[in-house]
Each structure stands twice: as structure tokens, then as C-alpha cells.
Image (cartoon, rainbow, N blue to C red; front, side, top):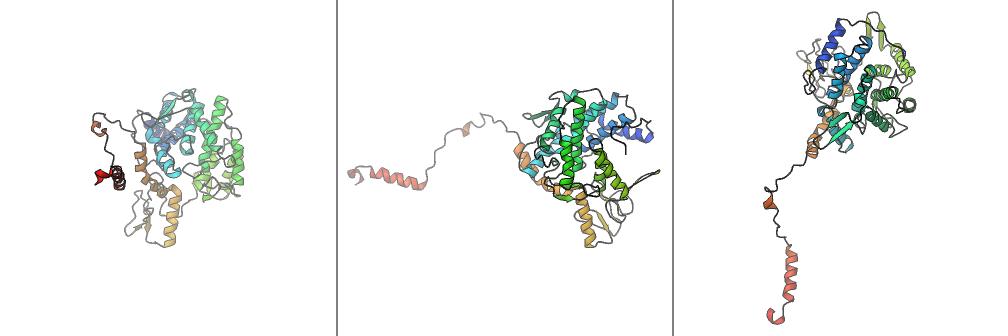
Length: 415
């Protein structure tokens, strides 16, 4: 693990690096309105468009920084395209449903309230791009337009996004980490917010970060986000309730993403992974301890949400005689004890929280009906409806009115 502030060595790209770079360039150099090659599974989980754009740009930025720091050209153009594609409605429209179901409020704006999984990741893309390229077009006020419909457009820029990050973290100053999904806080996602604000302060000479890094550091130990062994809680609430314990991929992400703002905490987390036997580094590579105990049956694939086959294939089909779990559709094989079934499904739910997200689909119809623009009526077509209607009088009122009229007559007329 490199020390914070140290420049990594610039090396020549090998064949594998060039092949990976070519894949991302093919995705991002196509026209902005084309999405060929992107996965179209769903927009609530790990296979969403936003994550494909985020990490494609991160990979190209790292390639530019460590392989060709003096080159911009099409490498910078691909990163710009990724940032512009993040403003497409299909990328961020999921938040309208998320907020309606999770908080009972209708506001499709994906930046102003919570939703750190979009705003912080987006801001980090802009920060990396401006760090490596002398281009400040995304810092121009209103340069990023998020168009919901013909009447509603949300205009943002780099500074406005990081200010929204700060405002969300200061909603509860004693608990600065705020949710990604409704009411669910992921410490790894909040590191993107701190890194984005730090980059903006360094690039533009602002002081938006302030003491937020110190507040988050204090919250780690006070609220129990960081355990005594140096590992982090993966998922919890803003009040400090633990929903998922430490996970290997989460601790590895914390060790990497905390290095710019809290290098001492990042180094301690990395040492905890090494000393605990979760990560083994040797001359041949890096060996990771498996996080899902599946007895050789394979692990869940977050992108396609399928379980690899028991025979080592990647088609997600169990071998002959095998059974599937009704909840996570994973192959169970011949040993289908209840304890093993519950353990498998629990690990699958913690990995992608797919079942919780599927519960929100029921509100999609209501959200669309609520967001449907009001149609203009043709006055000629509804002219026949504008005629005044005769008011219907209740029967009791008619009787009473009739009695009053009858009593008002002269005595002779009544006879």
C-alpha cells in the first residue's frame, strides 16, 4: 500500500492493460445517445448504468495517471463522455422511485437529498478528470443538466454537487455519514464524498470539506462503525444500528479509499486484513479469503445475480439431481439441510440486497402516474361538458321546501 501523497511509478502498459483499456474506450467513445455494450438488467443494484460509468472512468483515469500521464486525446474524451452520460435520465431516474418508497416523498432530484451512491460517485468522476486534465468545463455553473421532463431540469456543476454532499453530511452533525439507499448507510460510499470534497478544495482553493473528515473519524469509533480489530461494519443506519458485519470486499475498499483523507486508518485496516489471513500477498499475486462459505459451489455474481454452476461452469445451472433455492435461485446440490439453505440465502441477501429492492417495484406504477405530465385539453372537445348542470336537491329538502311553499299560500287557496 502506497503512502498518501507519494507518486506511483509510471510504467509501460502491457497487453492485458491495453486490452482492458480498449474495452472501456469502445464503451465510452460511442455517441452519447448510444448504449451498446452496457448491461441492461436493472437500475437499483450493482448492475446499474451509473456503476458501469463510474468505474469505467475511474479505470481510464488510473490508466492515464500511471501509464500515460502526458497524454490526453481520446483518453480524456472518453472520460468526458462518461461524465456527460451520467446526466442521462435513464441513469438517475431510479431515485424517484427509491425516494417515494423509502421516504414517502416525491422529488426526482438525485443530488439534493441523500442518494450518495449517485452524487458522491459522480463528483469523484469530475474530480479525477479535472486533476488529470486542464479542463474546468464541468465547474462552470449549470454545466450539468439533469432533465426530468420538458418542465423540470436540475442544473448542477462540480461545486454545487460537493456542496450538496456537505449539506447532507451536516444534517446530523454527530452522525455525518448519510445513506445511499433509503435509511441504509455504507461507510465505503461516504469515502467517495470525502474524497470528492477534498479534490474540489485542492483544485479550486475552497474550504468545503471543513472538519467533516474529523467528524467522520470520530464517528467511526464512537458509533461502532470500526471494530477493535480494525475492520469496518459494512451496512448500518445513521443512528449506529448494525445491519451487516465486516465483509472482505468492503474492508479492502475502505483501505484504498481512506488513503487520501485518513492514511493512518487505511493502513491499520490493511494490516488487519493481512494479519487476519484475509489477504495474502506473494510474488505470484494476491490471494483472498473467500467470504461466502459455499463448500466449492461457487459465489454469487453481483452483475448478473446468478450462482455459478457446481461443476465449475459459469452458466448458473446446477448439475443433474440438484435443486435450487426458491429465494436466491442458487444451486443447492444434494445436501439441502435447512441450516445450509438459510445461510446461503442470508449471504445472498447481504451481497446484493436484491429481494429488498424488488419490493419497491410495486410503487413504480404509482410513481409514473404521479409524474405523468398534465395533458392539455382541447376546448372544442369538452365544450359540451361546460354547460351548467341542474343542481340536484335532496328529497328531504324538497319536501321541506314544498311544505314551506304550501304554508305560504292563502287559506282560501289551500282549500
